[in-house]
Length: 237
Image (tube, rainbow, N blue to C red):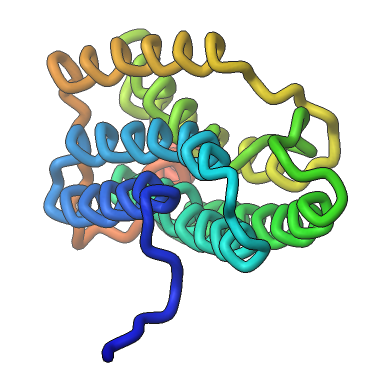
């Protein structure tokens, strides 16, 4: 008889769907369809918002099943909310030495946070169980809502200002991942309200945004290039 390692039941379905959505979104981003990529990122966030509730609905989970769920969730989150947003922002122009440094920082902070979460959550499950009431720092899932919202601001700013916003967003959110501060965990009503707001945001992005995606062959950072051009013009005789 064939046996498989891992847990295969309804408690992990949303976690797998979140991963699949993000991997598909990365393929679309690579091909230049950033609108589909944003949709996939938001969808991954929705799946992640409810995977814990679905898992806890099974009352007879063993300790191994609980620990497997914790590890699986964090490993998928590394891809969905660590690598995927960084890749998307890179393809949209967060490039060059500056852009790569920010992307590296963001991904590193996401991994540190998730590893720290695994340690704390594993200990907490042994003593408390149930759902944690607060976060320590900003959860990595937040990028699935913040990045689509940032795209909404594109209507109010130039392409260069929007590119600056992407740099700042990755830098600040990465820092908040590892900053130790208490953050109340939203309830079901707050989550549903946030999902509805993001759904409207993504709908507007899909319908109206016309962001010009840089050429894949261009590895320079437009912000740095603009600054260098201005300095050259200022210092020219």
